[in-house]
Length: 217
Image (tube, rainbow, N blue to C red; front, side, top):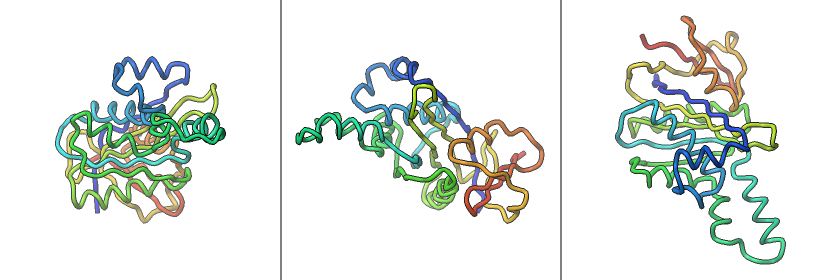
């Protein structure tokens, strides 16, 4: 089944700049959401802004570690003392929160899922998006990871899959030509699609799966 990819968006934010970026984009709207959900929303909203259009969509994103820092903070601050986690501390540990926040922002969201995936398993996301497109017109797909250290940027990469062609969209499908494919990871497959300008299809491998991305023109 051929699907179409629109508005690949690769967002990198230095940890020191992150609070200001969130405030500039969302004011105080996400103040209690926790950093992982804020990071998801920054990238997802940037992708939706670039893609345009409206109507119902599904939201699907993957992460290797999810809201790891909020979970560690909850364990260190509350549970280690034998006390229950405070409500907003608990909320910040929930990786699925971004889907609900998108729905609150007047995006009609039909279904959501956050998957814990190793770096090479990113093809699970376009595969599942392809299945979901049998029941909806658009699936917002992301790969999100918080920085593990001060010198590494937070990452929130997103793209929009559609069942029908659109101006500027890339045609994408699983490929049977693994010998020509370049290895990709969850960290770089969306940026590589965003940067691709070739005439021949871009073939990217993750695990045993290969996906082809090509101009629909």
